Image 1 (spheres, one colour):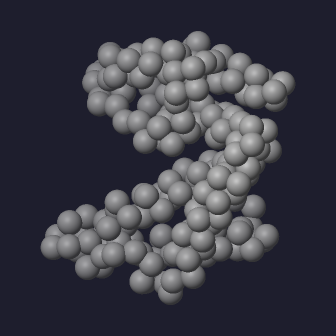
Image 2: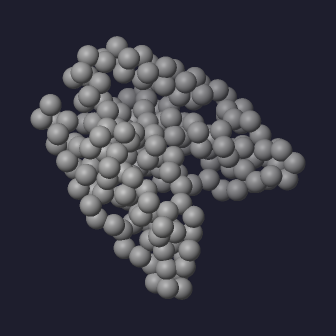
Image 3: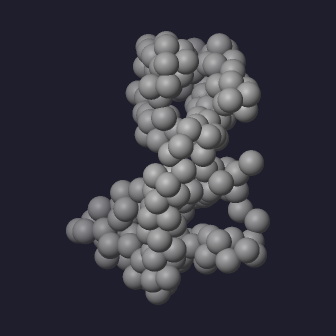
Length: 195
C-alpha cells in the first residue's frame, strides 16, 4: 500500500506542473487540448480512472505559441511510466496477480511472435503511394528488441519511444499503423516490468 501511495503521489505531482510554452512563432501542442487533458488527469489519477495505455494514446492538435512538444512528451512519458508501475503494484498487491500475469503473458507472446517473423515480412506493406516506414530500419530495431528479450541488449521504454524510421512509399514500406501499435505493446511490456 505504501508503494502504491508513493507512485500515485509522484503521478499527481507530475500533473501539478505544466510544460513550458514555445515562442509565439513556433508550433507546439494546442493549449486547450493539453490543459483539458491535464485537468482530466488531475481528477482521474486519484480516482484510479486513468491508465498508462490512455496516456500513451493521447494526442493533441497544434498551434503557434502552444506547449513545447518535447517538454510535454517528457511529462506524459513520466506519467505513463508511473501509472504502469502503479497498475502493477495494485494488481500484485490486490489479488489480481493471475489477471496481471495472464495479460502480460499474452502481451509477451504477441510481441515475441512478431519478433520471430523474418526480416521484411514482419508487418503489412503500405498500399499505393502511401508513405510508411523503411523495413530495414524497423527490422533493425526488432533485432535489438529480440536480443533485449533474450537477456542481451539493454533497451528501455525510452529507447523504443525515441526510435525513428526513414520514410518509404508503397510496397517498399511497412504500414505505419501496425508498426506503431506493435511498439506501443513493446513499451507497455517493458514499462510494466521496470522497477
